[in-house]
Length: 141
Ligand code: DGP
Image (cartoon, rainbow, N blue to C red; front, side, top):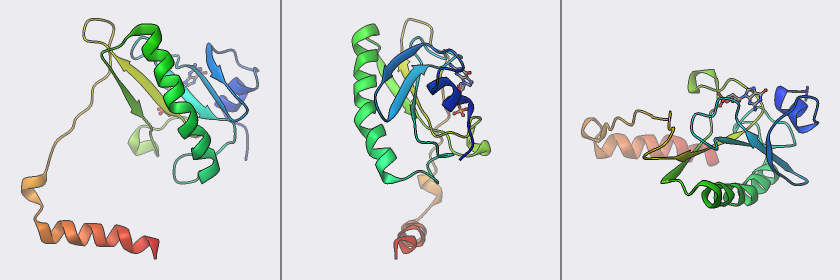
């Protein structure tokens, strides 16, 4: 797969503020610093997003995510932390190299993160939910 801006960062061609690296992943400060310590965790193996990655890559991400989250927690003692992962332009993905945003949250500090979580349970009955679940579950067959 062709190079991405994140593979250039991993290779050191573009400078970054590194916070963690092992054989499989690289973590560095997101330039936008939506919250203090906003970090990106990126697998070294390139895939565009969650639809195209493989389970081995995700195992490496799964191993590193709690390590990086706990390092951020120890460093800044945030009031919480969101992990965000965007897939596709409509879902706000701008760099097509799989990555996870770790966003520590602060009640009384710089915190530019927010999202809308509008619930629709009153508009969907049990039959519709069963049908929706069935349509997804059928894809595993
Ligand atoms: P997303 O929208 O989920 O694809 O997030 C991409 C993020 O990558 C965005 O928050 C800004 C960050 N980013 C893009 N280019 C660079 C860069 O050159 N250096 C750093 N540190 N972050 C970058």
